[in-house]
Image (cartoon, rainbow, N blue to C red; front, side):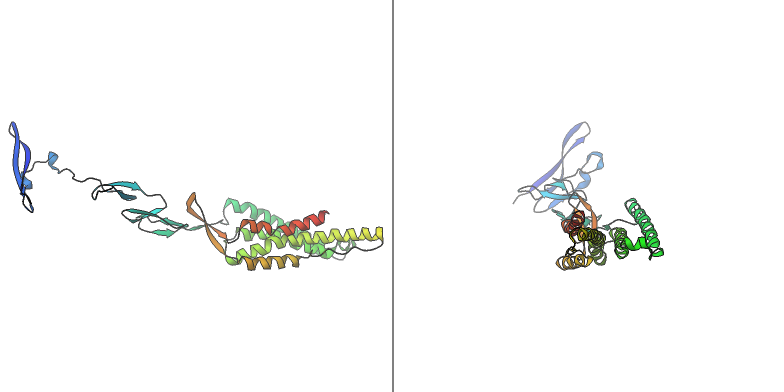
Length: 282
C-alpha cells in the first residue's frame, strides 16, 4: 500500500524544475495538460513492438509484456499470435495467414510446348501408319502381301497405331479412367508389336528348321497379346487406378496431378515386352 506524487521535469523560463502533475493512491490521477511532451507526442511505452502480419510472438522467459517477433515460413500460417503452423502438402496460406487453401493442380496442357512436339510426332505417325495400312488393304490378295504374313502385319500395324495413340493418353489430364488406360495401353501396345514380330521370326525359324531337320518347332508359350492383358489386369487389381496430388518438399507452392502408380511399377510392366524383344533376337 502506498501513495505517490507524480512530477514532470520541465523548463520554466531559464530554469528547469519538477512540476506536480498527478498522484497515485490506489488509482491514477493524472493531469495530462500539465505534461509537455517533446514534439507534442507522447513517447511509446512498451517493451516490444507489435509483430508484422507474417510474424509470431516468441515470449521471453519470465516475461509477460516482452517478446521477439519471428517470421513464419512461406508455407506456414498463424494458428494464433504465438504459433506458426505448416499447411498440409498441396496447400498454401491465405493472404491474411489465418488458414490454408488447396493449391490448383498442375499438369501438361495441350497447348504447352512440351505437348506440341509429341502430338506432332504422333500425328505424323498416324498418317504414315494409315498409308501403310491403305497399301496393304489395296494389295491384300497379292502374293507379296500374303508372303509377308498378312494377318501378323495387320496386328503389328495395330500395335504401332496404339503406340502413337498412347501419346494422347499420357498428355491428357490424369483421371482414374485415363490412368487405367495408360496402364493397359503402354505395355499392351508394345506387346502387340513385339508378339507379332516374335511370331513372324518364330515362323521363319520353324520353316528353316523344318527344312534342315525335317520337323517343325514347337511354338513358344505366352507370346500372344492376351498374355499381357492378363498381367495388366492383375496389376489393376493390385494397384487400383486413380490420381494423387504430388508436391516436392522444395516446391511446396506447386501441386502436380499424377496417376496413383509408382514409377517402378510402370517400368516393371515393360519387363514382359523386354522378354519378347529378347526372344525375337534369339
